[in-house]
Length: 448
Ligand SMILES: Cc1ncc(COP(=O)(O)O)c(C=O)c1O
Picture 1: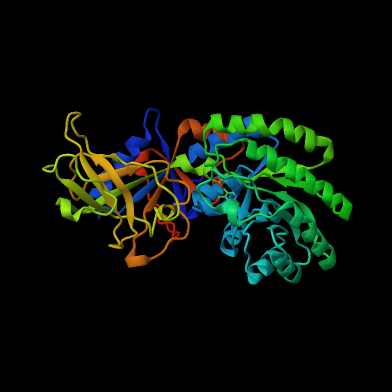
Picture 2: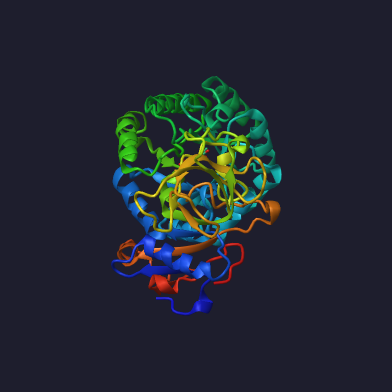
């Protein structure tokens, strides 16, 4: 085991038998109570290992390419890299991050639908050849900046139930694929496969059936043009639930066996993002200010209190939409926090809203929830915060980024070693036995 602090940048606390995530949070809150009450994450990296085992059990041989934009913290990237997972990058900085981990270019795909020419050139220099494309202007730009690029044509899906607008904005039609193939011939660019993405809010599994059938049509079309295609990318959209993974597998497997059998030589890949990271990270935030609103001043969206005499509370916490809750700006956030301090079961609950620290009207995190009366200095715990929360964040209003504590249970550590990952293969990490000695990672400085 790597023993020297100075060898590594980050630590992972190995939990004693019987110790839980709640113990780690209690311990961190105890420490923070004396040191400024900064918001922090606890990342259970053992969950990533478990998710990967589950993926291999249910989805193999579909190879996962993890979208770095979902959570680019060093712990996540290094664990996933050592597990042999590929990476889907949407920018130069993401490509550089995974290259620094020693990931080979064949295990990196460049998936931004709107790529900057300079970043395509960067990919070309780095030998990252596989990239997605859904229109002729993008294709011409790629042809100029990276003549050796290998394109995956990104086709649109009929994901009409999706909250996010990804599928409406990106992805092309079958008809346009023909046009793109003509352009590719003209510009001497290779097309090597098809990509689609079904959002994780899509409840209609038929969408996969249509998308895989459409992909087959594009493969047939490619043969007419003389392109030898061998990659099918079925995108992300896996929630993290084993049941959903099995349901999707149940729908897609028979179709893949018919349209893309093993003998076809087509490699099926996927881009599971929140599947890996969402449940692995828990965020603890501190209440920094509080208002008791009279009815006239209720924040927008907060319903009138049932009883006019009942107070309505507005709490301000030290993280918001210009930080960990950025996804709140574009999606509905349904998470309600847990109150960390103990309170009696019969304690009255009050209509409450939660706001970030910016004093900006967009910085509302929870519009309306029922909580016991809380005080400035109390802590709230949000779980399932691993996806879309830990990318590059703004420095709006001197926003202080949460610290990150990594942990893993001894049993997950054993499982990881069984999977061939040892402390020697984790270059930037050292392992500390016991959660009490956890040291935090300020990911934006690399000091341990
Ligand atoms: C094109 C594309 N692929 C993959 C993903 C990852 O999706 P998920 O986190 O739902 O797996 C996303 C998420 O935004 C995406 O837009």
